[in-house]
Image 1: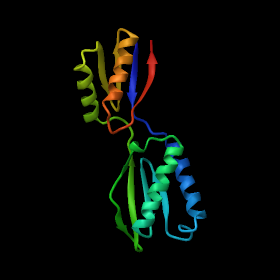
Image 2: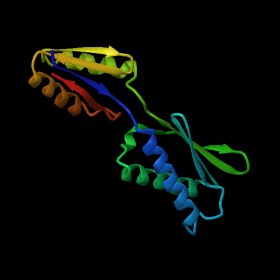
Image 3: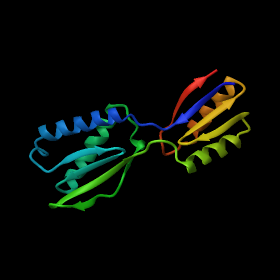
Image 4: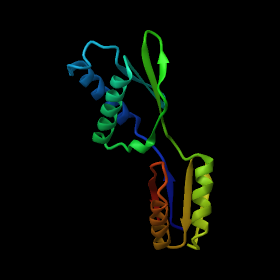
Length: 161
């Protein structure tokens, strides 16, 4: 029975490469050189610190451009509100979305079952397994999920016959 998995994964090595590119640019750009601007990653959280809101906005734009250059979907990053930090700086946390949460999984599952396509959707932790009798049913399911316009990037992997 053919099947595939619906997952939401962000390549953390590419995130690290984007962070390193931003750090290099901070050191070479005239307006950011010698300031307290920094960006770091701890597991699935990025932390940006800057002197003021204008520089924080510049860092955010830099990060977004480097993420796009590394072919990472900006929708996988949840930019939170800036906060005051120690030493007259501003801090902004950015969480990296990994995996499909249970609410989104149920929403996708319910929508696929409502289409009358003859497939079964099973929630397996942070992934969805879709199986059906024909390959065409699975391809139409992928097309339907892509058309749902969800706010989280999804990948379709492990396609088996």
